[in-house]
Amino acid sequence: MKRKIIIINRSLVEAGAEKQSVMLASILQKQYKVTLVILYDIISDVNRETISNNDLKVVVLNGDSLFIKAIDFYKLLKTNKPHIVFSYLASGNLFNALIGSISGVKYRIGGIRNAELSSKKLPFERVFHNYFLTKTISNSHSAVSGLSKLGFKGDKFHVIHNAFELNQSYILRTENNTVNIISLARFVPQKDYFTAIEAIKLLSSKMESIENKVVYYLIGYGEMEQAIRDKVKELGLEGLVKIIIKPNNLVDYFKKADVFLSTSLFEGMSNSVMEALSFSLPVVATSAGDMEYLVKDDFNGYICDIGDYNQTSDRLEMLVRNYDLRKAMGEKSYQIISENFSMEKFRDNYITFIENLN
Image (cartoon, rainbow, N blue to C red):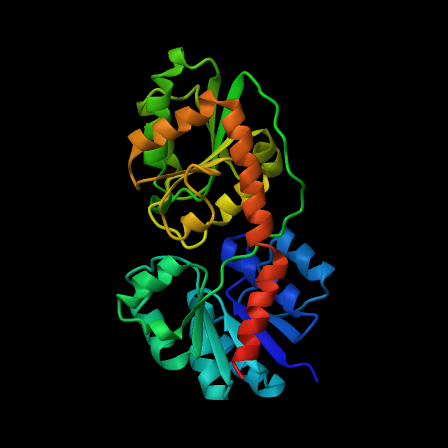
C-alpha cells in the first residue's frame, strides 16, 4: 500500500517555492499517494499544466478565514491520515506545525526557501521549527547556517537543493555586434538592482574602448519599479537599460542574451540563475546564499562581493570583450545544471530523506 503524502502551500502562483512544491508532487507521485493542498485557489498556467500532465490531486481548503481553513485542513488530515506532510513558506508551515500536530501526523516536514526571514515571520518560524515540526527542509546551506545562529535548532534542518526541469539542449551562440546582458528577479531591495545599474553605468563609460555595443535587459516586477526607473534616468542610461515587465516571451529574452547578471544581497538557491545556466549563459553574480554551487568563479562565470559595482563591472567587461570566453563559460553552465540539479537527483534526495524517516 502506497504511503500517503500531503504537500501544503498558500497557493500555486508562478514563483520559486510554489513551482518546487508542484515538482515535488510530480516526482513523488509514482512511489507515493500524493495530494497537493492549497489555502487559496490561485494556480499559474505553468503549474496547472504540470498538475494536468502528472494527474496530480489538488485540494483547495474551504472557508474565507484562516480559522475556517484550519478546521477544513484538520478534517482532511483526520480523514486521509497521511504519513507525511510537507509544507512550504510561512502559512504552510503554520498549518503543518499546529494542525498537523493536533491531528497526529507522524512526520511534519516544514520548508524554508530563503536565506533570511523577515522580523515578523522569524519568531513564529523559529517556534514552528524548534517545537512542532519534525524536520525543516531548506534549499540552501547558507540559510541553515544563518538561522542556526538565530536560535533555530541546527540538527532539525535538512538541505535539499532545488531541482531544475531541463527542457532544452545546449545553446551555441554566434558572435554579434551587440552583447545582451540580462537580469531576472522581482523588483525588491533583496535583489539590489542599484548595484547592477551602477555597474552598467561604469561599463558604459568604457564603451569607447569596447568594440561591441551593450544592452542591459532588466526583467521583473515589484514595489521598486519606479525607484529603478528613476535610477536609470538619473544615470542617463535610458538608451542602454531596457526595463521589461512580466513578458510573455521570457524564453526569447534568455535565448538572445549573452550574459546573466545577479546582484542579490541574499538568496537561498536562485531559480533565476538556474534558469540562466539552462540557457547556456555565463553568469556574473554576488556571493549570496548557495551561489557557489551554481557559479564556479572563473569556470562558468564570476562571483563578486555583495554591493561591489566596480568588481561587477570589471567582470562584465571581461565577458563583453571576449566571445570565446562567453562561449566556453556558457557550455560549462549547461554542464553544471544538467549534471547537478536534475529532476532525477531531486527525486532521489527526497526519496532517501523519506525512507530514512523510518
